[in-house]
Length: 145
Length: 131
Image 1 (cartoon, rainbow over the protein chains, first blue to last red):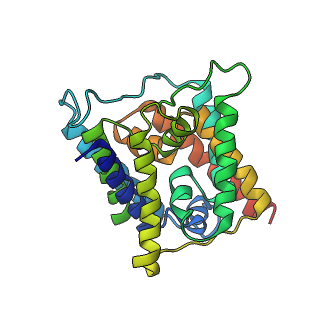
Image 2 (tube, rainbow over the protein chains, first blue to last red):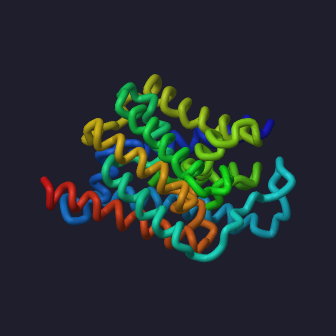
């Protein structure tokens, strides 16, 4: 299977998981974040299931020197907890709470027929460009987790 | 929880076979700022996400739940914050929350705690102080 086919399959299963778990339902996400109200903790289980299953595969294959269809594992290069990590994540969380959208679910629910999702996505792309081409930036850099 | 396991296995597939992190904000960021530079797998992944949506709407519409409460202005502001913040913070729910914590990254744990906290605070202010 080609690299593109693997990536497509991954995106397909990833998206299906977001839909089945209702991560792609903004009202459900808001319910998860609303700890002082009628708190719906079910998405915590979803995140736990996701990180545990990914973590298990990652752990089992940790001795491998290379993935099956690439020369190396593209590991994030940044290290250490720094200011941009914290400030950026706080900013992201604010937008997440305002809308109920994070990037993956926003892309998936773009297909649900509500034009407001694309309004959000347009603004999100603008925000991405605003940061990557901000004054004083060294130019677009590949994001590293 | 089953949906979460699907998400994790999809990310594991991308990691084990292509050696890439399934972080949607970084995939989007790289696609829009560096088109052509190794973007084939990224565009394919995004196409897979969209196909999942189209497929679900067509085949299992009863499983598609969607309710959006925010108005247009609020969505515009939220989109800007999500786009800007995920690039500054090097990731989002998928890259940090699933893959990062899954591979025991301290950076990702801190990032996830930060966006969870500000998300909860924002909802608290919107629903309980301003409402």
